[in-house]
Image 1 (cartoon, helix red, strand yellow):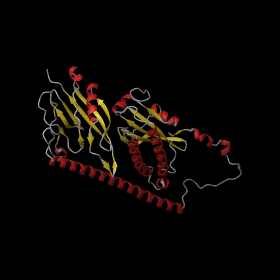
Image 2 (tube, one colour):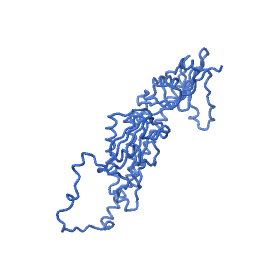
Image 3 (cartoon, one colour):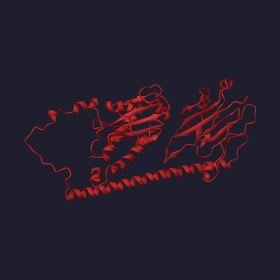
Length: 396
């Protein structure tokens, strides 16, 4: 079908669009199945290995993969799975790039079609040593699915010159020698039609196939748009319900007060001034919004303030200012990234920056938080939350 569309003038982009829709679903499934914070699929195109689908903290779409050195080159040339447990100690990766993308561990699986490595499926995590044997098996199964989708979407497309030929051990017995592949009857000549010869029947068939593929691509694009629209509506409905519930229920003395996010409800409203951390206390922000603040010891502390619907925080454990940090006059901000699981509990908490003594106290409290579970079409969905905790000491 891809060949018929190309011969009729559709070009290579028509089959690529259908394939990209499938790759987008596969890369998201790989990220969630392996508890990764990012994932990417790279396939050969025009002499380069290009990222065709990405999710989370991964290289951007269209980024060219280095096929001459590092883990990617080893994965393609050997046809074997490659793993990096810690980017801070592995010499095969670019440490600066990994720090920029908040990557600490990664797993790469070759996409092998007919004994040739034609791409890479890779997952990333902000935590070191995040992947295990089960994740390897999961990625291998998804890589096989990509091969099947690639064959279905691009039958007859010429082979890319960048593809690396690999010969796994299980294929050695099936490879025929040049002598075995020659025909035993050298006197028989077969006349084949010219490659570009068309008859009225083939032209009619190509036209029908072209029309069918165009309809399928348009239908897939419309369906993707509907799914995205429904998801956004579900998110907005959930946020409004949580905000209305919190506004109608007055807070009891000393309890947590939830206030509506008026900046989101009214885009034309003026921006709020930045909230300053109280001297001698701490302030916690999530995705740029204040969710907790406390004054210095011995002073009256106003009720903590929690941002409204977007974070859907149900239970919070307040961070404590470590006495060891106070005695050493250590203060400053700690920035963290929390993995919120589908059931609302917090999984991995990655420290992006901050003093170790302060970071340990902040991370310990955040791991006990509980969020509103979030699901799409009946399936629970994970997400990442960026949280900042600011510790400050009284001025002398």
